[in-house]
Image 1 (cartoon, rainbow, N blue to C red):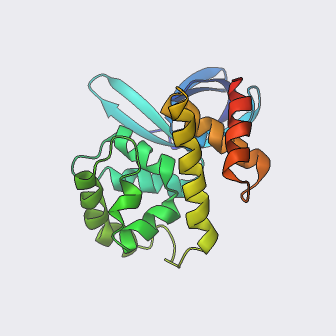
Image 2 (tube, one colour):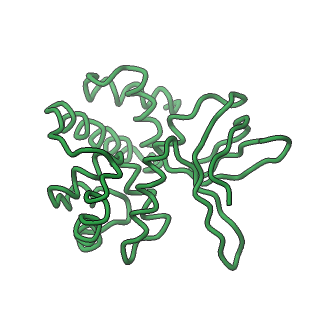
Length: 202
């Protein structure tokens, strides 16, 4: 089983990255947030891996840190949540934010993930409550600063705005993450959208 890869980032797509390690190229499935945070092509990267072997072969899922990998594994323990849905949840919630949502049974926060409806979101916050918080895998639960909710709203509105212009959801999220990284966490919505469009070449 592969648990970690360290190598050169050769290619990226909307869903996968290609990392060369000791002459071998590994195709790794990653979430939008992870891909947006990776360095430029040709740079060295380190990703934490969850390996899943099935009848059709082995697939590698990559994450920026161990907490994200733990959250990915925990999410899949919920009935009806597969790798695709687990990645979608981690695209909109960090492990800490997921723990917050579980602690407060905030199914609305979880349902913002693509393909996760209200019923599945409700199941996630209920079934993860004991498994995640009792083991303290994601650290202590504290009240998030007021700015966190504002930032989440701005990011979501920026993504929605780009999608309204015909940009795919995945491309929109990648562009917005890049724009926020460039402009800083306090950037206004209009500035985020302008920077995102510039990054997209529109």
